[in-house]
Image (cartoon, rainbow, N blue to C red; front, side, top):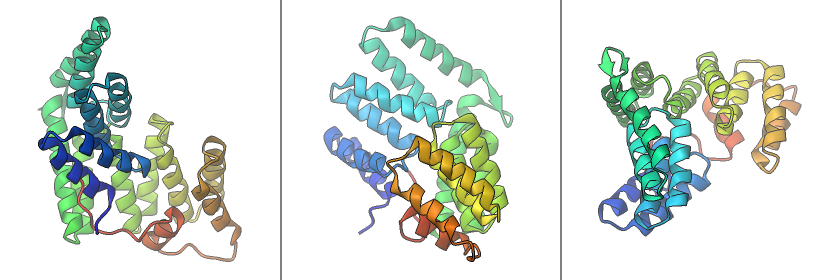
Length: 259
């Protein structure tokens, strides 16, 4: 049975459309627990919590969506609605001003909200190519998405992982490094930055990244696995897909669908 995060989000969307908000919450909490939730998952989880009368929890999830994608118009609008519901009108108005500002910005020749929608459509097309086995075509679609939404770090993270799978560690390194620089709290991106360093032959860089990550995420057993890999000094880095799968303690990358 397919239990990938993408499939769980797809199921959660189905439950949401049926107004089974608790069912959607259950599935989305599973996604969040994997540590690999994208902005879409956090947004839908926040919206679901709002609709079952838990506005504070809804705000937490909407904030997490906006941390990953600061220009997420729907998340901004729903955050404003929740704030208004809580009587925090001044904050709600500030959020709405931010949303209006985004809609007047232009990226790639398009207004901000249009560019954001097109970016998400490119990402969806990329996932479709990936499911069909077209890794290079998927990468091209995610690159097009980021040209329209350079601040969409959830999509940047996905692109970085695909570049690793394609054996393009140096290109992946650039994307993970940008995420870590602009979103220091995105610790999964830091973990992948270390992996990109390792696969590019920079063992010292990988060690520095992972040792810092260990201080910030000491409870994560994967970090020790990363560092243990470096202790095998006589081992040449293996293929990106196999290394990534082994170090993340998950199956080798498969072509799954992202909502």
